[in-house]
Image 1 (tube, rainbow, N blue to C red):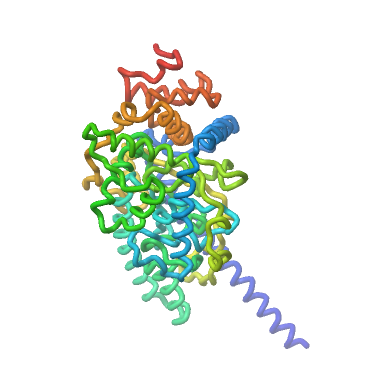
Image 2: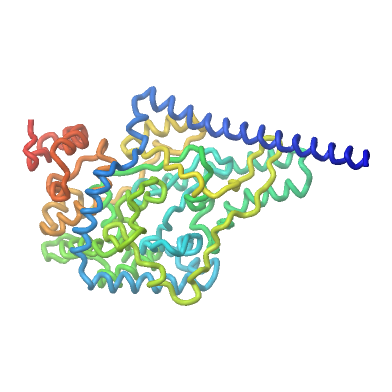
Length: 483
């Protein structure tokens, strides 16, 4: 009896010791993560940029305006575009139901967004080419990048993967030199390497790129960021991107969707025939029925999983401009319910080595994206990142992929009908509300008044950016606020 009590006592002491070690490690890991964010905030504050880069939650009044805009957009949807969008979604699911790597032979189609999500949510058509919520995660779990198409994303993704390869090599070298037991070492290596090989354990489909997971699985507390662009510039650039589909062998799926929705590839040569103008008009009008192209979708729509907004178009009725198709309407039999959203087995930490996969799923965290940076601040952002995480993740010496040609932002005003311009402004209302410190709405966005936005708010929100970007053609004219 005495011996049994002695054994139990030793077991109890060992258990308490183990728990203290875990808590000490957790505290150490937490401090390591907080250090990166603290350094970033300190550096950004020093140059007067921190407040500009920190996103804020929408107020109830702002959400009300956005909901009113969605109602107006919904009224503008033409059934001819709905049919094409639904056809594209059905065809996409038909490809993705074939297995984990289905669609890999189609360069620009990804099934990642169909496999790791809650089936009750709507599926956004554009996510076949840009999966919703997909995020690049550093192997050391210090930082994560949420990419946006047409916002220097090719450059930033490439640099993130390059730096992650360096971080991974250093991390694995530390693991191999540690004194952990062979099984634990093997588990840590496998858990870290798998995401480089596009094997996200939370999804039944391969990730679209190395070091990609879903935003819901990003560890809490780490440095998370994205870059945003003037909505008008981005939309014009996105349409020019679609104009290049006909000459690209890498846009098989995108070309098919264009055929389904617009009835053909757009003609982007403004030669006076009116064909290019008509294609641009149809592209804008079609977006009222669903977000079918990642280059035209408003940035706030793509960012929604990471912004922590309570205004989610996945709830309730279908809402155009930021909407998708209900999964149970679009999925062929056999795909429904094929998601796997549970956490993978956790890996025991050892000697301050962080396992790659977080212990818990992000939905229990509820932490929004930490930094939303205007692309014009890329140089300052690069310097702050380098000081805080010790890596150059935004190589400002390299040029971004800029497409010339028609249309330029100014061409939208002269080309689009009043109805299309009104629709465009309503679709991008949330972008301008969220990023108004940096970007001025076009002078023809008087539709902002129609959703109830008062003069005082408009002047306060856009005053600085509008006076900086268009001092000679002030948007304040239609609000009667010129000074």
